[in-house]
Image (cartoon, rainbow, N blue to C red; front, side, top):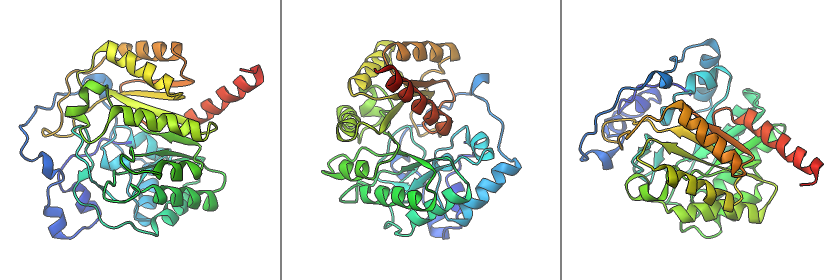
Length: 332
C-alpha cells in the first residue's frame, strides 16, 4: 500500500474534517512520551511513491464511497503497488481506535457512532473494483458491547449480496471481554479469518498493552473449533527486540491453535513517539524463518521485510485453496 507522509493532520485534511477535529493530535496518549529517533530505512525497505493511473482510480472509488482504508491509516509501504492493481484493505467502524498500541499509526481516542450504511458502501465498492478477494479490517471498538462483531457480520453479508463471486478475508480485533462476539463473526462465514499476534509475548506490555497474547491465540483456535472450513491466519512484526527462540515458540503456539497461514514482516516506526525499531532484520533472516515455519506445518507462509497482512491476499488465498484441494485428493 504506499509511503504516505505521517503528519498529524494529513488524514483530517484528506477527509475535509472540521478545523477543530484537524487540530486534535492524532495520538494524544503518546504526546508525553519521549522521542525515539526514527532510523533511516535500509535499501531493501525502500518503495516507489504512488501515483499511477490505477492508483488514482482506486483512490477515486475509495473517496466516492467515503471509505477508510488501513492502507492509508497505517501508512503501509505497499499502498502504491496494491492500489495500482485495485487492491485495497477496507477499515470499518471509523478511523479512531480505542486502544493505543505502541507500534500503530491509526488514530486513537473516542470513536464516533457506527455508520449503519457502511456495510452497503463496502459491498458497493467491492463490486465497483471488481475484486476477486476483499480484505476487511477494523479499529478496536472496546466501547461497543460486542466489539463491532455484528458490524463485521453485516459487512460480510453486504459483500456476499453485492459481489457474490468475491471471496472475503477479515482481519479482526481480539474481542477481549466480549462474550459471544467471535461466534457472531464466524457464523457470517468469511473465507479467511485473520487476527494478528503482532509480536512475541514478552513484548506485549510495551508494544500491545491492551491485548493478551493467550487470549489472541485462543481466539484463533476457537475459529477452527467452530468452523473448520474457514482458513485462519495470523501475523507478526520483526524488529521490536524479539529473540529468535521467542519467534520459534510463537510459531509452535500458532500451529497448536491449528492456524493455516503465517505472515512475517518488518516493523516500521511511524513517528518519534512510537516504539523504536530495535533492528532492521535482513531479507535472508526472513527467508530462514519462512523455511522453519513451513517445516513446522503451516500451509502457507509469507515472510519478507515488506510483507503485510493483506499484501497479495488474493493470490495467497488461491494458494491456500490449492493446498487444501491437494490434501483432500491425497486423503490427508
